[in-house]
Length: 303
Image 1 (cartoon, one colour):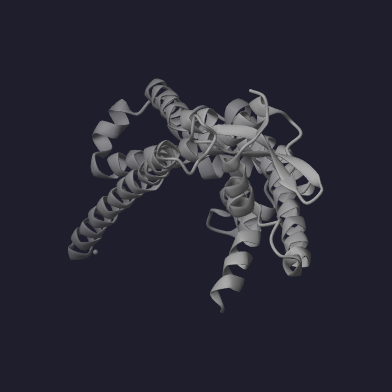
Image 2 (tube, helix red, strand yellow; image 1 turned 90 degrees about the horizontal axis):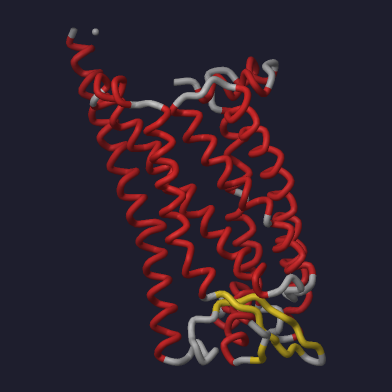
């Protein structure tokens, strides 16, 4: 698709970055953009390195188990996402000018949501797996195996691809006039007429947002909470049985607008924190410092 100057890009550009607001916010805007670029870069470095180590260990060094399948897929999702972060860093550093073309604009956004859906549903699978293991331990011992875990993981990736497809379809590049310069931006485009203010554009925007909220948060959150509620209830029952036997609105609006890149970059740090959590999960932190990375991860991922 050729880049075009269209009205929908104005709303996306100003709401996403706020860099074209009043001059009095120029310094604050630049500071926030610099901060977000630094955070993105940090997430890229830690995410690629940390998740790369997890992939190496769980995929090639450790004995294959159901748990390693879950965490391998989680690490792959996070690695894929963090590997694309340099595009976002460049985008922010160039004052939200996208030089990589329309296909990469679509792909970069799609990978972001692919990571989100894949990660959250892998966490759902882990929660269900834990719940089944606690509530029906005999059944789990007889039916939990590598083949089933691999099939479930493949199903999760298929779902994530389906849920992420709209973001490939409704993402485009376009020209945005900024003072005396013209930026090529990467923004949402929900309308065939390239005007998100039309009824069709608003309907698609709302449909995508509601679907993302339901499928990306409400459904997985409900399942995860339910699983751990069942686990806690079961463990409490077991423990009981054992014990028996043993400022201004305008200013605020501009501040929120220009701080959005920082907020998004902080959210993306999630993808580089999982490997650190794997290391620090355990009984004694001091002992783990003395262990090799392999031994640390083997301890965390063991059945």
